Length: 248
Image 1 (cartoon, rainbow, N blue to C red):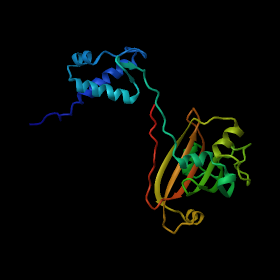
Image 2 (image 1 turned 180 degrees about the horizontal axis):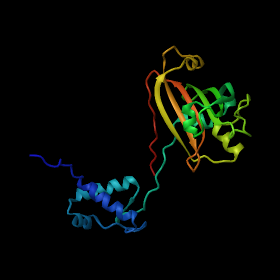
Image 3 (image 1 turned 120 degrees about the vertical axis):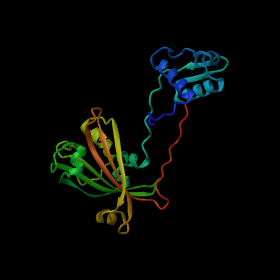
Image 4 (image 1 turned 45 degrees about the vertical axis):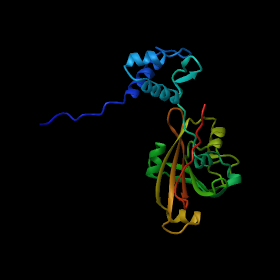
């Protein structure tokens, strides 16, 4: 005998939470109004009080509701999604001054590799400005080999191809000199063995493991403005990130 596989039904509290969330998003319960009481919701959804309370607490944690002493739950509305704070290594790559934190290894024109060309959405071999520097962050004590890539045409009027150290971060310099505004940055990461030049620049043993990070800075139209490739040694204790939990 064959039949259709059974799928687990969603938990009762999840069904209640989804129903209430949909009503809030659709304006049935506008911001500033009070939700129906626990007793009313128990009757409406034919659920236990503990199940209803669990659903309401879930919505509170998501930012849809706020408890009001002696009155019940007030609707806050649809919460604005919060973007995560970039890790320290990303902040250093974008905003750390070369003057205080970097040694410039070289800067100039080079043909775009297939990988960099694909990210910048330019033709393979098209000229880019490649600016390579070693950077040190005293807070993390991680040395970084950081290379900034930007189409040569777009880099005109900036100092990315010059041999002088920048007094500001790569992104800050780009925004100031080109009078443009970046919207977001995408990070792609992978673990790999250090290339010979990377090992030499970072003082690593041959075949040392590294964490490679490719940062793509984009404008509001999702066009790539510049790319920063970072290579760093894997710490002895392994890779870990610590994120602060902010509570409203």
